[in-house]
Image 1 (cartoon, rainbow, N blue to C red):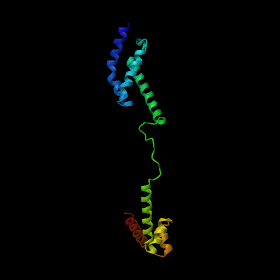
Image 2 (tube, rainbow, N blue to C red):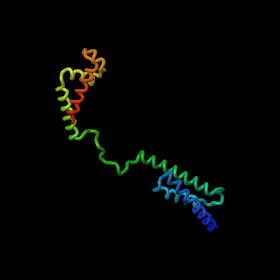
Image 3 (tube, rainbow, N blue to C red):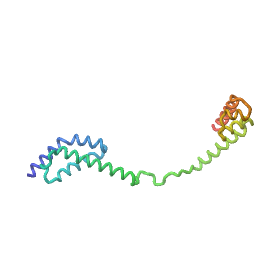
Image 4 (cartoon, rainbow, N blue to C red):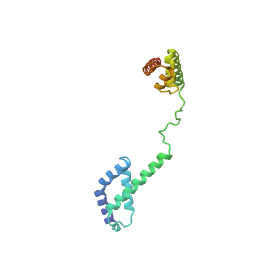
Amino acid sequence: MPDKKSSSIRELFLRNKRGLLGFLTRRVGSVDAPDLLQEAFARVLDRDVIDDISDPSAYLRQTASNLATDFTRRRKMEMKYVISDDAPHDPRSNEPSPEESVETTERAQALALAIDLLPPRCREVFAMRMHQDVPQDEIARRLGITRKMVDRHLQIAIQRCRSALK
């Protein structure tokens, strides 16, 4: 009897291994698929009476599917709770480096100087628009100048600020 069981398992393996391997590869990837395929066949071999299974191929496919589902679930759980050895042990601080702090300070000083050197009306228009968020039409009304002049003052201010930051 054991000989009959082993030959039917062998036939089952030969008929289904390629299809199941492709199926498992799509589900879990090429690295883990062969192990799950082997596990599926091992579980079928552990069955005492394989003849009681009405469709051994379907049983094998369902076993492989269940293993793939369990594997995927376990991987998601591991990714959620297990810290990888590849992860840096000293995570980078959100604080800027000393070099970045110096550069930021220098850029802020250059920008402040560029704004201070703007002509008074240009500086006033720029401050109203950028710091107080006043619309251009309202700036023109408040200062008694045209909208076109407001746009020109803003254009000059932005050009000088960009030049200062280069």
